[in-house]
Image (tube, rainbow, N blue to C red; front, side, top):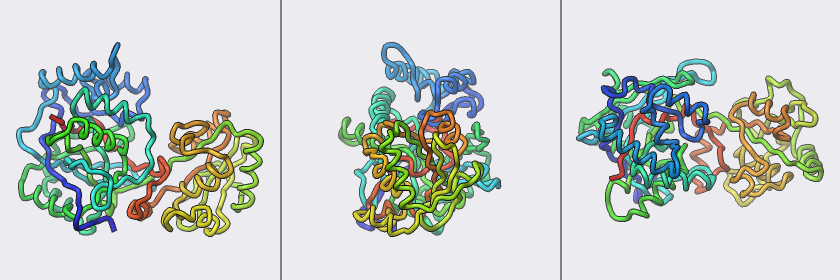
Length: 425
């Protein structure tokens, strides 16, 4: 259970900084996807929509120091009234209407707030994945320059009764404060809620909540480093979050597939032996390569660059995984990405945590088509296609105090950057 009576996360309304539509026009022209999925062409396309697009600050360019350029530009936007700060604190209701995996319309419901920065621990804030080291220094330098949380951390909390959203829902019957549709067709809406009774009800509903970071581990750790660096009390001791209930029916998790390269003959033989020893191997069509959501022992899609044949791998017995992960909790022993890592990536292929963290002979694919293309073009030697990790499993592993391998989950849809900013001064 993700709750603790003696220690708890502190959730507060915030005096947000946000775009002034009277200056910028459509909110859709100035928001952007998360910085780490934007390439140079997409950055240029976003800026072509509006010179005020958030990507100019969140993914800065400039010579000699892009972070100084970000600071100067963001300061100028505030002086010009491009972005303005609210006079009173608010919690912001947020919905994301999107097309789900089965093709129907789904709506994920959450709210923006500020959360006091804590060390990771039971009853407060928990991570659920190991993180890559690279992005932290970049985000810390940007935070120092802008003194602002430019993008929110996405976190989950348990609210079986839906009390927090229930306190906000009536306000969403009004026209939204802002609305934007992203490239995936997801419609993002926000409502500013300043009603003190609603805010108190949200705080009461989350008073015993433990927050599980779903997306944004690097940014949370950056925020913690910045808070320690500045010291003392103030806005910098809080971080911008969007909270979604674990029980929300609009919560969707997609898998992230694994790719390997640089596999020499010895490791090819070790891989073949491990697959034959531990898995039932069945030929499938390319359309069947991605395994479906399901219970039971590990199932994987598999293709290698040499044979180009697509296979379904099914673990012969759960005891194989449990033995390989004997020092881990029972929920972790049933985690697909953890089992693959133990038996194949680290076991047969000899990858280290450092190899995985720094993407040395290792990579990821967002969907089956991309994984197939990368292997068929010879950019990678093999692909392992994963099932999505169930939300309950994410909860159980976090509650056991363990972290999953990186990118064990892909919560969809992503939060946009630019809906709200949280000043740290």
